[in-house]
Length: 310
Ligand code: ATP
Image (cartoon, rainbow, N blue to C red; front, side, top):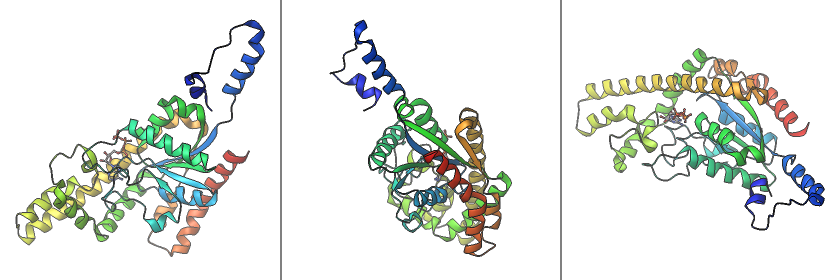
């Protein structure tokens, strides 16, 4: 029971008589000094390694479950364009709020997030699990942690900031776009447009996703039978825009995290995966894993161990 349910309960009667004071003091003491449940929050720009860190930590501190805080990954569909973790990458770790929002035209709001994330976190805690919030929508994390009194009352957070050098991240994002194109992103967006989603309002719902509006001109030209040269040119332009937009998103996200860092620095820890991104694609998977262990994972494990048990 928390303070909100105590005050909301119809059986709660404030005790005012002086001889009841000790009982009142004890009740208030236990209300205000109750032990809070622990929540890990992983923040960072797109492409910095938040999802992998969440899954690795969940596997290391079982039982743990991940709560997605990327506003675009809440929607079902466009799995490649929105870069959702695959079932294989999840390695059996349950994920919440990932691809569960079915209406492509509606905005999933910060208030929707606060309600659904609180409910997921409550259910994880009931199962004696550790909730790990991970995702790039800092406005959602800000809303949950700073503007939801019940969350602040019930939970203590440890923030991990995956803070990579921006020029290195920008290069890595550009390579990630090439990999997403190779993995079938154009086909995925073409199918999305064919399924009656081809409207030009890119300010609402899942169509806000980076990787959707950029292909508008190319797909319209393709549908109207444009020649190969025109299509190639439009496709190259779309891919170039996609790279720039991803880099701009990363820069904006880092600015927002800097603002939150000023508020949360006592419980926020910075991790630097720059070396991991530099090695990405230039060494064997085993070596890549070793660099990840040395530069990110061993430090995060120590931080969470201390947060949970000391
Ligand atoms: P803002 O207030 O600017 O919306 P935010 O912190 O709430 O910021 P962000 O996660 O930074 O949310 O998302 C901002 C925009 O970035 C989204 O509207 C979308 O265009 C794009 N975006 C975010 N996540 C993704 C994703 N997974 N795939 C594609 N585009 C994304």
